Image: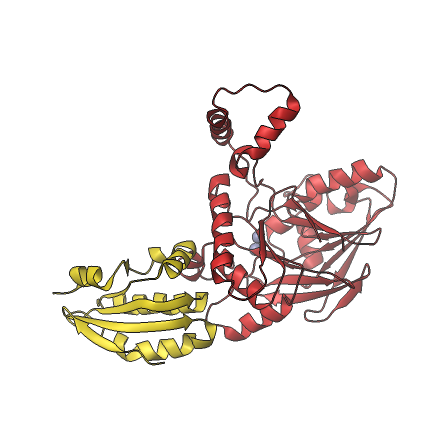
Amino acid sequence: MKQVVFWGTRGSLPTAMTSHDIREKIVSALVTANGRSFRNRAAIDEFVDSLPFAVSSTFGGNSSCVEIVADCPEHIICDMGSGARPLGQAKIARFGVPNPQTYHIFVSHLHWDHLMGFPFFTPMYIPGNRIVIHGCHAQLEEAIRLQMRAPCFPVDYSQAGAKIEFDLMTPGKPHFICGLNVTPKLQLHAGDSYGYRFDSVDKSVVYSTDSEHKLDDIESFDEFIRFFDKADLVIFDAMYSLAEAASVKSDWGHSSNVVGVELCQAAAAKKLALFHHEPIHDDKQLSRLFAETRRLEQITRGERAPLEIVSAYDGLIVEL
Amino acid sequence: MNLPIREQSGVLIVEVGGRIDHSIAEEFTRALEPLLANCRQGQAPVLLDFSGVIYISSAGLRVLMMASRQAKAQQGSFAIAALTPLVQEVFTISRFNLIVPCYASVDAACKVLGK
Ligand SMILES: [Zn+2]
Ligand SMILES: [Zn+2]
């Protein structure tokens, strides 16, 4: 495995920035510039790069879609949230039409925010392409078809030009796909969700979203520590604060940055990507959570090797 | 788990120390049980002196939340005091500072809770 590309990182609902948000960023940047003038574009870029992430950039608003770039010509994708639209466009731009490609899509669960990008994933309309949808839910095919049917959507599922196959996987068992061992794991979430661990000869990536962790369930904690064991990257549902997840939003099916850090530390994982961001949070709040998570890792590290923390944003590429 | 207890201004002060992590959470719950049973209206408030705690994990924080809930249901008063700076940071990052009452020091807590 070479890299992981984040196409959609927002939880529950695609979330657009507002004019107010953009205006605040521009005002912040101008205040920092303090009347300075710039010789050329390069000088401007240098200044923009020096600004805090929440001013110069955005976490983005597409819902869950993550690509794993492996050493095989086939494509590996986790979930089909709205981030699947730009991903599909990028593949068409790169490989052209017709230029048959195979896409392996691993579906965590059947909630809308994880499937809604599929009807906008252009490669599915192009004959010659092959799409294999892997998952552990018995209703996987039914759910995919359901959202492409009147009155929900103007284009019927039968219009798909690509050859679409479904692969029902067995949780807890490694499946050999694209030169990788892919192991699904059952997670606590309404209607069940599944995490996926991808192991190549030398790298391991875990995609674990929409997964609640009960703080008194030590057995489950131990299971996840084994699931994350020494992973190079763990993509983790950090939607809520620990206090929210344990109190007012208990049983809502999501986790926190604190539990992400604890599990990754115990599993000796190398990198943790905070994922499935709460739609209510703006870039400033997400940046604050990111900084706090880094700080938490630092003060609880002890004798362990450092755990690198990233906060996933639409467009982020993590090299493995 | 040994929790030394003293009294100050009518407040039951419980000394907690060391690492409150997953491995000890259950034991911590059991050790608090008899104290919480009496943490009700008209009885002495229960204050955990956290000055000796060097680490707390999510499981430890949950024990505090459950304790605080039980006290509230019994109309008793339960709080934590004297968190070391690092443990205070964990409370802030986890937002548990918003759901469990925390005081800067035992004296400060006693001024509010005691008689
Ligand atoms: Zn979701
Ligand atoms: Zn969900």
